[in-house]
Image (cartoon, rainbow, N blue to C red):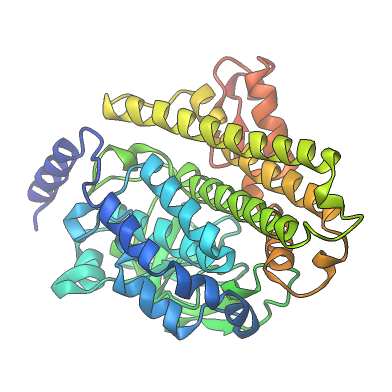
Length: 408
């Protein structure tokens, strides 16, 4: 294809991308997920023991076609809006937090690859009905040596969430030419290190991996800071870092919902016993506060993402404040899950110390909140910007608040 022809194709894709695509498949997929809820819940403890979702759960997720949720329509995806995807993540995490985190590690980056990489890679990954699934790590890049037509990449990466179901890697690299890129390649080109020995989220198989001197063509990379959108609608005008943090926010909502469900069940089971903490007025008041915090965080999250949807639908760029609020939505939902987990530890007595769904969700909560998206440094920068203490020309680049006028 000539450069002129390629430019024409990309321009056509940009014209198609105007406006937010609201998926008509959302209700049907949510209904299919509800039909699999009993299986997903039943296998939660076994998935944790295996270090990955059970084969039955993985088959069920493929059967309901959940991995296509965010992919552009051009590759056969459903292209959910952010508010649709948040509700999907909430439902899946409500049924099983480990399975949801595994899905979280795949659905977002698979959609980004489908939206941004060259047509050559798209044919390899999605041609003839194929549906490549990607996982990997991009915040700590490996090294890349520039060669003709691409890069030779090497490095060590952590936290490959979604590795039990992914077929390919989506991994950050820093070239010796100064370029920061996301590289995509088959998962079997890496060495996977089974070292996911952790407090919670044990079912996610978020192992480390290593790549040694593997060639990746330019057609299989993209610039994550200023990506060229080749497919999909306006949702892909939102930067990939915030689409990723959106997944974590939906996950945290589902965790809140399940924690509340489990404490209600425990309270009812103990209702006839004497001297039970969950049958006191103090607990009822504490439960009301937990419920209010969950519902408040949910409404705030959906509100800020609805505002972002309206902005990109109009063809406009998100403001620095809007991005701050999107990130605050993720922080608020995760800290709400932490608050509820803390309260539950106060009121459950000895129930929490024995292996059960409540304990598993408690541990998963405390592992999930260690993620970068809700870390204190990001939280602090969000607060500084919203408080008006950042420079007027400040902008977000991934999870860093950049202030050009302060750098001069």
